[in-house]
Length: 418
View 1 (cartoon, rainbow, N blue to C red):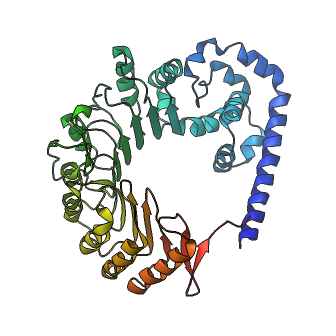
View 2 (spheres, rainbow, N blue to C red):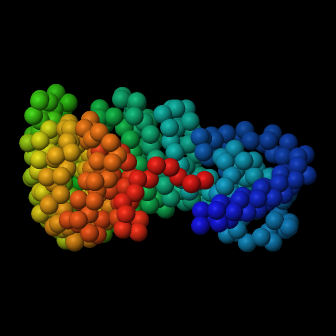
View 3 (cartoon, helix red, strand yellow):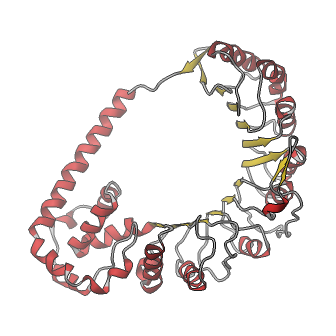
């Protein structure tokens, strides 16, 4: 089966190379015209960014006649262009008006704004000034993790950029905790995916209440002052005293996936309560672990996929038992114990808890310092776990080995076939 997939991939790759060669010949025949076009780029340089090409200029009128390229369906050309790197896409977009339209769709559908402020400003200014390009943007990622004190002009430009993107469905914003909260009021888009490091405050809640189409929500912000973080031998809590603002019960009616990287039980409960969430990634802090798990029971449909990052040194003694009590319909479970070691005895003792799961197929149970001595012992534990939970198909235990069920035998996946 793998050999057939490789052969098919090689065939597709050869077809792409052939079509790319034709495009290169096409560009070469028009090298003189490209030279003329390059001298007219002075008005277009503001659009150049890490992955954005300049908008077409008026000189495209000389290319208005049909060519052999137009005999290929636009959808086929679009698929081909998806395999080109950014530099090649820019060159193709400058070769011909017909190709420019298709290349721009690929170039502008996903924008990455980096920490390089000159490029960031050029990119965002281009989107604000050229509505026809802003309409093409479906996804934008703002990566500014090192910009702690942005200028007012930069924040204003970010606001104007976001308000110029009516077709946007995915928004990613990564800024440091000290970054001023940016108002998202007045944005015309309807997001499906929203990933942000903004604090969970009234401004963010107001924005979430205006986005009924969101299905995938990631909250990565710290909601307490770093001086209030709680660290000790028995606890590790990044939100010790935070009380979140209320979220309207009618907000986020389609929410299915929640990634709450640093959130405590109060935020988790506020976000998931009464909503059709079936996939969750969240932390468990020592002083509120049970409260966090209890918060997830308020969803309007059963949780099917759960990923836990535990900061409790005592988690191996209770975590599988507490999870199985509350979420028997889980299909996939991942637990990472960041402050605890997990012994062979603890894994064996946890096995009876797995009997409560009706549908569990995949489980990952990792610890910071694995105490297992051999893959053979992990295989034995996998067999024990499967005895209590016959639906299990794949198990990953603290040593990191992938154990899978193959013809009633648990095997260790050691390498991938070429």
